[in-house]
Image 1 (cartoon, protein in one colour):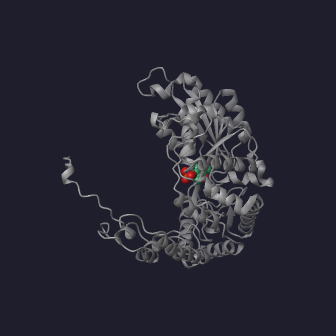
Image 2 (cartoon, rainbow, N blue to C red; image 1 turned 120 degrees about the vertical axis):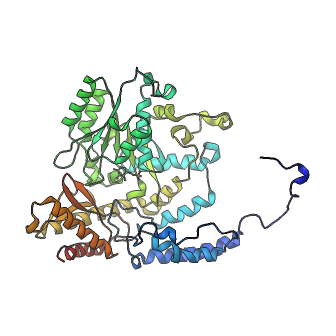
Length: 494
Ligand SMILES: *Cc1c(COP(=O)(O)O)cnc(C)c1O
């Protein structure tokens, strides 16, 4: 690249039209958007829950190059309805029962506006004292509301996948003798295989973390579950013993409280015993269910989690924060810091000994002001308001399960400890033909999703194809659950 000489540089421009749009324009468009969003939130039911576009259709409707000339925000905002909305699957729709719900609540949406406006870049404490300290305070509020140990150190990440990655990175760093931070893992005859155990129902993020850390996918040991889909501790004990005998190093166990398929709960107290005996790190994945620890009559699902080395919950799932916000706690902040701390000279500050910078404890340097949305939502609903809402979702799920059980030809396929119901239609004619039952129930799923009124997803339990209805959207009422159940029965009899 050749450089322009000073004489060739354009003259200093002194142009006033090269900055941002004006604050007045912001206000005008913000009003338009506030009306548009309020209208959307008032009637999400005018849209089909699941977008009806075929793969590629959305992209084909777009220009192939960016505009050469600036377009007005009026035009862009007008295009939301025409261009964007057809490609949107409505997670905010009260008929959204797929996967795990994720609601953008009003306080959450408003907080995102402020987060963007303040645009804090949390690379270290002085880059945003408010970000750094509000994060510490809000995750402590949440920790205490969930009855977790008061000495746990917490921080926000984007997703449970990253929280679990951090957990396993710290687990690997706990024994300094492995020297992996400095020497890496490749080309080392002195390093045993490092093994990570979880149940067959654990989330795929465990495998991804192991792959990313270079531990090798085949070192994830997936243990069989019992009849209620919980990790079998006898299988864990046996696998650890076999691995020791083979010269491997049992590193960590990931126990799940609220599995993705059925919300089953691994026996954490017994798993913690094994971990303590074997010197393994215990990470508890409660990405969906964790917030339920705030509800007194659901606390029992969390027995033993106080013995975990680390724990993850996703407020963006069942605490009504818009995507994204995951909270990660560990009782070994020093190990976490040893894993990730690396301060280049230009980020060294006088206060670094006394001021906490989350970047010392995580892979990423810069971070968003996610704590602000936690602060908005926790305050706007309050502990009592959140508990009531979670309770309501669990009651709706329990009632749905009762209706399914009472209906001839239908069956519930897993316990319903939380807000997810696993079930299927099993008409007498197909009674034991798993392949035919799978086709039949998949067809039911397609039919109800095609109505646009609800969106459910499925899972598999062993050979069985299972319909899965996850209740957890802030806008879902009994009437929506009743409607879904009606649509399902209708779809089963066509
Ligand atoms: C949703 C979920 C995850 C993954 O969450 P992300 O935030 O999308 O990474 C992991 N584990 C469990 C149990 C989950 O329910």
